[in-house]
Amino acid sequence: MKYSLRQVQEPQPCGYLPDRLQSLEVILATSVSAAEYQSLMERGWRHFGHVLFQPACQGCVRCRTVRVDAARFAPNRSQRRVARLNAGAMEPEFNDPHCRPEVLDLYDSWHAAQSDRKGWPLHEPGAEDDFTRSFIHQPFRVEQWEYRLNGALAAVGYVDVLPEALSAVYFFYDSSLLGRSPGIWNILRMIDEANRRGLPHVYLGYLVEGCPGMAYKGSFHPAEYRERGKDWMPLPADGGAREW
Image (cartoon, rainbow, N blue to C red; front, top):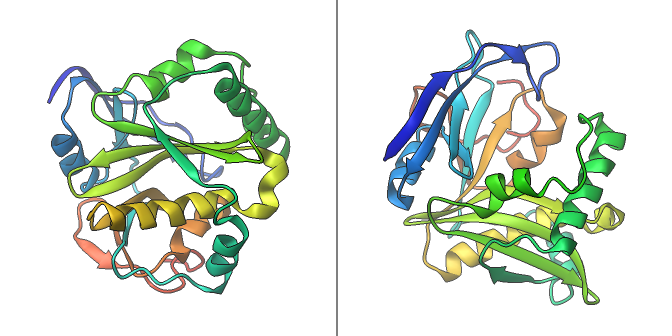
């Protein structure tokens, strides 16, 4: 891996836990292979485009990396319902990353809905340069998964394709389809696709203790979690709800 910048950011309000401060260690990579990134990811790193980051918070380790055992995964009752609702009706197309107007429009409308529902910071619509840096210009293979319902673009996911895993980078969707649980459906399809490609794991990013918006990541089993500086551990069956 080669990089032009590596630094630890000054603490700022946490985007997951509003009563806490967060600090990130950030790398601006000029080149990084899929294998190199997987090794970093297994130690808690994530990325948007060429920007790699990991939590560097003092006195807090609530961001825990989670990975699902794809071959042994057993859906629960709710996940089976989501699969029945969407199978055959809203399937992904696997594409190279690109920024068409309909993709950017969906991203903008989704972000506006999140601002209304969850108080996210206001987002500048049509910011194609920012979108391109985060999702289109990638240092290794990333797929753009496009879901359509009755011909209309319904959801878009960005998925890292790594030597031993698929990893969820980002996902957004038409908010009117919330009843279809598109985020859960995307993870179920990632698990199916990892099995089809012979990849043992699906990485879901951070499961954050005390953050209700991240609790869904604890509902896919069997899975493992890794706390900063420690080894992988089995994720408890109530991993999305418990206090660790």
